[in-house]
Amino acid sequence: MPSSRISGFYNIPPKERAEKVREFANLTNDDISVLQSILPIDDLDRMIENVIGAFSLPYGVATNFLINGRDYLIPMVIEEPSVVAAASNAARLARNNFGFIAKATKPVMIGQIQLKTDTPHLSKMMILNEKEDILKIANDKDPVLKDLGGGAEDIVCRILMNQLVIHLLVNVKDAMGANIVNTMCEAVAGRIEEITGGKVILRIVSNLAIERLAQAYAVFRKDDIGGEDVVDKIISATDLANADPFRCATHNKGIMNGIDALLIATGNDFRAVESGAHAYASLNGYHSLTTWEKTKDGDLAGSIELPMPLGVVGGGTISPCARLSLKILGVKTSNELSCVAAALGLAQNFAALRALVTEGIQKGHMKLHSKNIVKIAMESMMDNESSICNNNDIINKVADLLIKEGNISVGRAKEILKNITNHA
Ligand code: MEV
View 1 (cartoon, helix red, strand yellow):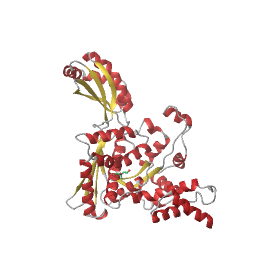
View 2: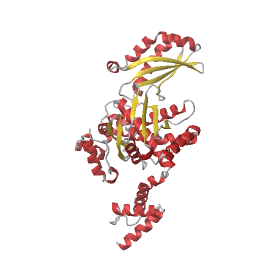
View 3: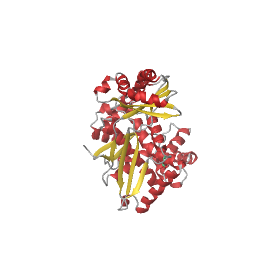
View 4: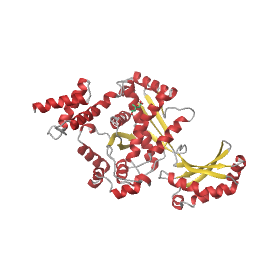
């Protein structure tokens, strides 16, 4: 396996980057061309309703990730500058130690069946008494999953608001699993009513997938990250997140910057993971999804744990771009993808906190932001067709000047561009 430690990746043109990814993941030219094409309108029309076209977002690749001793390039689809660079940088620092160690539990999803009954305690006993029968009805809906070693495995009953909430636990193997869980919940509802004499109200997957967790940890050497002072400040910033939901929402958002970008690149349901992550963080009071501690050597040890219901089969993972992402990752199972997602979330949080407690995050954002401002200025100028427009050298030069002057505005960019045109 080649190394994902690619120095200078940031500074080479996109085509050369694609070439490096092609070599790393043994891709064909056709694989790479998937990224330049959009799906035929008929395929898009089968994915959602009322389709009129497709929407593009940048597709980047985070480098340097070493997870459980294996090198990964991680595809990320995201509109925000700095996120991919920050993840790559954190991964570079983590690999000075052992990279990331990550683990995921068995892919068990929870389906909920809400039962209105006058006797919730009695109904609970009756359901548990007929558990095997209910599980069989559920599993008859997907014999293939059962043959693969998955399927409905257990039932847990909870009493809330004097109603019974029945949890159907389903091992969904390599799928995200919402579809099959919903189908199974709907299938067993009638039998549950028969057994209890109650009335089923809703039947749906829970996104708080506490049976399907991913965890990761890493240790960053103090000397690599700016010394013990930075270690202490990162720990203090996390203390604040744990004490203050206003800060914690942003802290956890930074974690999801990375995870969502990977989920979009692999065609996964990022809303499901988002809602599960925040609900999980809310158990026992809204808190950070990560922990940061100082080791006895003064280094920074980080860990993360969150629900990770990801699929590598079915749903959006069948799209050509998602297949390409899985190929670049070299990932075959939902379990392994969950490990990568957890490591990426931890890396992203480390990078954000380190920037926040040192130089701030704006410096990193400014380079790309400034280029976008120049592009907007160019497009709004009358002489849009002139040779200076869309000239990358000029965009870079003007963007650098705006940063140097500390005035990143369309107005100033236009003035500089006009000067260049007048002297050209
Ligand atoms: C920005 O998208 C994410 C951060 O705000 C995360 C954080 O504050 O921890 C930088």
